[in-house]
Image (spheres, rainbow, N blue to C red):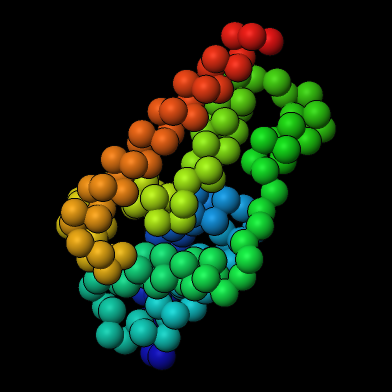
Length: 172
């Protein structure tokens, strides 16, 4: 790879890292694994870089690789991860932080991880990455109807879990 190509890739990787990482955290539910996932996707993008010179094309390719790798991980392993609420309670205890915002983020993370992988992926791509229904369908290699039904099912499940949590906190 030429010197200028490496500089271009480095600039690209720096610019897409935050968004890819945020999406990866939602999909895999673990910060360390999310970092590994983004790194894997960027390595594959680096290899394909000579074909991906357009920023939009490179971004779409890297996002697709990241989602495919995550789905491969889930298929190949019996997937387990720590509860986000346990990690956050440990973090709060260590820092003395008991803010409502942190609890809300933890609750949302826990709720998201009650969803099946496909629904989590759709939610992350549609609402974090702001992709259209068709872009999400293309990336996941499913129909737009599947994206719509997965989005609907995920939002319904999140509403149900959220209302159950709220009922539980009123009884405490």
